Image 1 (tube, rainbow, N blue to C red):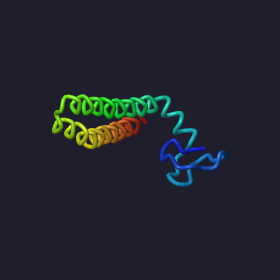
Image 2: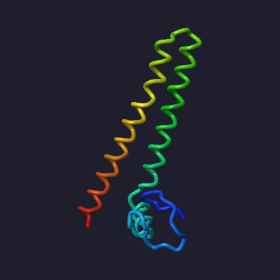
Image 3: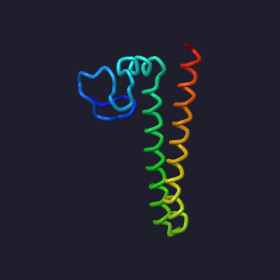
Image 4: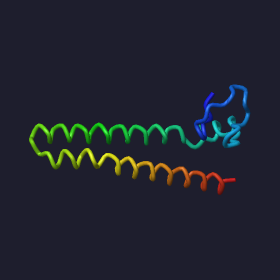
Length: 103
């Protein structure tokens, strides 16, 4: 089994993750309640689409012999993913704060 919080491999009969000490059942229940799984899939989809569109743009620019624009499109992939990961972290923190305030 994989821990839903830290993504480490843990024994199947574990109630808590030995790495991050999260209660597996409670984490899964809260994830369904707050839609964390949907957000993770959304961010992953956005990252994939960003990479695909940047590569398509680069190929089109190479065909049109706009080499500098093609290189810029390829080099822009890294910062775009970095910004999306920061946004994902901020969303995680805000959800965690919201959950703690609800209790």
